[in-house]
Image (cartoon, rainbow, N blue to C red; front, side, top):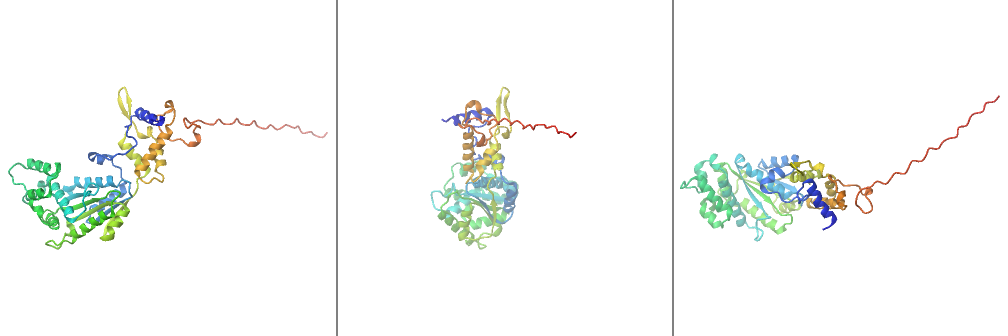
Length: 373
């Protein structure tokens, strides 16, 4: 281990920061609301689009937080599902259809599985027509509702069953997906929202398969000629190239919200939320402000010309190591980058070049004027 690495470990213990600092690992689901940092203006634009019947595309540059944004929007939609009368279905291609091609049948099965899961998972009996609702979840009153729902959650989520077992348990799902979406709208005023997310590197063929399946779904012949306009919404979190690929084969009137890259201040705020310094002491640990122990200038310098958020964090750590390549006794409490112009030749501790002594003033010789006389 290098001297700088050892000093980094020592500095983190000195100021009470986690050993993971300054990395930003994926946020646990339960901590998404408290740890995410977003652009307030752009988020309002996204929410306004999601609150309408528009098709929405949120375009994010690759590597600049698209996955976190997708998870946050999906969680927010699910938390407000009953208020909005909405069933938000997650179609994340990072985890779905990774080993098999995307087909219409596979897409419909996944949507059906999540629809009934969302109906079971929320107390819709408090706001919907109970007879219709109990028919959807196949509740026969043989036991209490809470016990039945608990068993169905295990059935659907613990070890996801084969689709034939899901259809046997919930017979109403056997119809065409277009008819099911229309049924939810007509009987419950419930809309379905498909939230799509794509991996950073996705094969163009997978996108074409998805678009082809969606096109057939929208054009499928139900009792009223396909999916009703208000029955289905679609939300895409994608990169600019993915957006172009989607639009190539199936052009529709999307409302496009371009989400900007994170600024240095936002990245610094992420570190602040994840890693509040807790300085150790005899009376426990005292929480301090991040700017008392770590300068934002590290992030500002790393942000310039960075290709993605991961590179910003790598450069930030490299800048810290470069600074900490010094004797341990020179490790400061506040880590703040110094200009290279004031570093010593061995790049250890800063030093000032002594100023040259001032030159003595030139004294003019006093000459007495002679008077005539």
